[in-house]
Picture 1 (cartoon, rainbow, N blue to C red):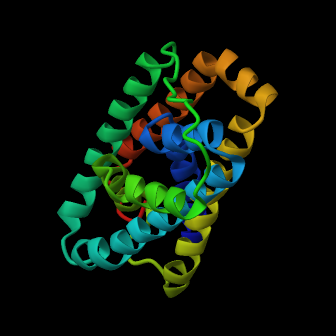
Picture 2 (tube, helix red, strand yellow; picture 1 turned 45 degrees about the horizontal axis):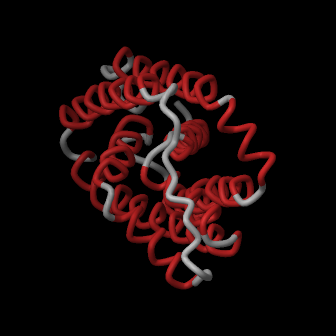
Length: 211
């Protein structure tokens, strides 16, 4: 797989992961609903910076090891595929479960505090770290070109911060929020199906070095 194709696939997989309902999604939506649109946007910024941190760790640490241990590279592809399927099963099972928000207004927003809440929520979630590690191990070429190290972090920031900005804008507006909650089950199941397909692809192609 060409490096450019691998990068686009990584970004698509990370977007699917960001779109999956979880602690990050809930905290952004809750701040947008219960505090203010500005607080939701500040929380989204924190999520984006947290994503850049995880991408840097994955790029600088993981691939130093994988470059010299080919069997580990293949094994992580299989493990990453299995994790994606597991994640997809959780998304599917929770598709019909309403999102629980604490929408009580706390008396005024604090964007700086909301930024740190977003950042610490992202960094303290071990599932996010595992997800990043799985995706990078499974999709990034074993010997990525130098430009990947410069292109991926800002692209990942755009994915993470961009998606959660959309969440903040939607959940701070009544009509878009109602539409999402009405169709939540279908949206989650489509996302779960896409993640499952990616996981199966990683497992079936694990023996092909460089994918």
